[in-house]
Length: 401
Ligand code: FES
Ligand SMILES: [Fe+2]
Image 1 (cartoon, rainbow, N blue to C red):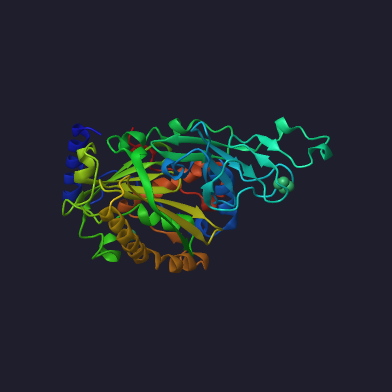
Image 2 (tube, protein in one colour):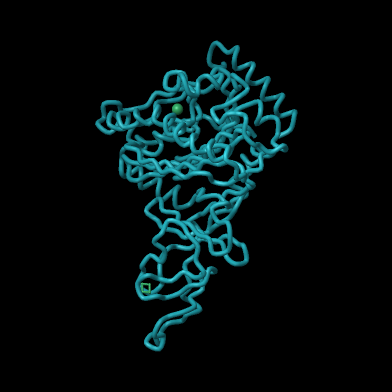
């Protein structure tokens, strides 16, 4: 983003600081039915209409450093091998042997010259071709050329690896286009994953994702951790097409929890030094770009009442003592800050599931949550959702084009 964009953002944040009421004419946000967070039927609609059809962030190119490197995507009751071939290309395959269906790979990540099934040793190349079958003469009907691993759509954008379970889905580039300009000037493709954490949560995935889409809770939940760095009142939101968003907040100390005295590339655009730019990326990704690095967070359902947060701590490719110490201590700090939110999620889920709170009430500062819920309905198809579970489509007129 260029200087002009920074100027515009600064003016918008200043106007936001002076705001004493909701902007005139801004749509009223109707209450959101709680059953969207508790009903197995709604979770099924999300699965069929959204998870199985949308581009999903699976990881980062640094997790596949060389030909033969692989990791497993194991969310949504799926197991997918994401691997780099000898040609350097990144591919995805169902982790399923064509013989009798065993998983091929059992370790979360590693390096392989071939994928060899742990059951009867059928062997596949890194390109997914079936290469070897012990006692092949006993399989008269087997057409090896037609028995390769089953591919999953896979593409890479700015260093992020995405998969899509729908072979008919439109290109990744089109899906991300509304948000891509927001990361210009921040070389995500040069980063590395410093740590990866999985956090199990006793709540619906959307309850957890909501938490990162508003700043309204920050002064209450994070008075000593995040609040000193973020000028919450300056929080501005751009609602983007395809359910994506861009948040911006003034830095209070010109600094962030990520600190300041660590390596950062010279060519990072000023906007990321001066403003906290956060990018909720539909359907389940959140990250907030800081010159030193960021947490790449993804939220996955594990049933209607349970979810998993995957956190990749992203930093620069330097290997110094200072860098190692920094990221080690960040692991503890990030865990502590997440706990400040997470300890409340179980009670929210319980009160929604028991029908005590039949609907959520969202204010103007929480309009991003509503935009996200509207997009879920658009993906599923509003007519496919029972009327009592829909959200009204009220924010399209507020989308930034
Ligand atoms: S199931 Fe894989 S070789 Fe038999
Ligand atoms: Fe929080």
